[in-house]
Image (cartoon, rainbow, N blue to C red):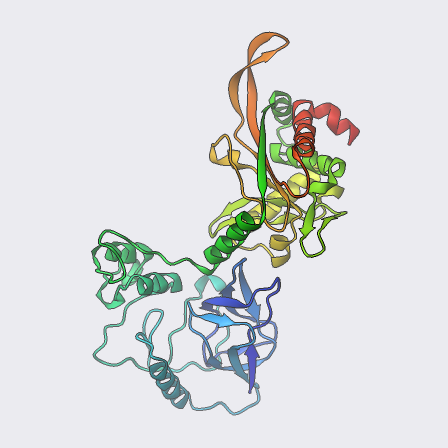
Length: 416
């Protein structure tokens, strides 16, 4: 029997949370078949098995955090005589009791049937598998599918056996637990409070933002930009690149002119490390929160290609499918907070980068052109930079380079 240890998922990650198992004990698996879905601080990924055979033991339950290098799943060689399922179930139950688990059952409940020779079902039909051992007769089995729901209940002291599920077939949903939180007395809380634990992702975001604020002496400059001509250029080619693709192209050009912002600061050697390649980070609000995947080698792309790549990395980020490389490779960040219908933002630099550029919403405003008052498409642009790498004059030069390109896009694109 071979035991597969949680592999190093890259980028310094030391742990992952089991979201759901894609196989159950007793299933037959093949090499490279995905066996578990785990959530790291960066993304949700499927982990493939390096072994083929029969699943003997799942070493972690959904919702549990597993350290890198710790057992994840044990698989017996396909030709090996299978062990008694009943014996394995009893031992698993004893292990649960020794571990102090208050709820041995997960998923939809228990079954007396054994599982043999089963292969993975299509993903759309996969549900957390129930252990093969029977439940204690006196215990009401809560119908819970999501490990996030169980974590929320545990953190708020809610006994799932007392919650009435409103989901299909009586399944307990997050909304059910949140309602129960309101009426459940929590010893560690003041009446009227509701506590929601930070997920691994939110903890990682919290640590990164706190580090950025603590280590980087940042400064912010901003400018109102007349984006009328850029807007007209975009409208003249309905099937052409989006506005952000044009802005991204202008940002890349400005970074060539001011390479100090496509850099990182080596505090040990007291050196500014300028980078030859621009891997442009795009701030994306996804289902799991704010992430910044990078368009790799954005400096080598045309506006049309940038548009394609920005759409692709944005879609993956919103679906939680960004790769670890995409989420860590950015050398500079572009943030389109105008998509949230706000005008400005004092953003936080994405450490270890040294700058971030933000673009607010583009709206009609009164504007003076050639001494005449008229209505123009105006946007506010803000630029946050690490004051250790340069002074305000350099930052203002970078800002004006981007702003001037937005105000006269056709002439700038002709020179790129």
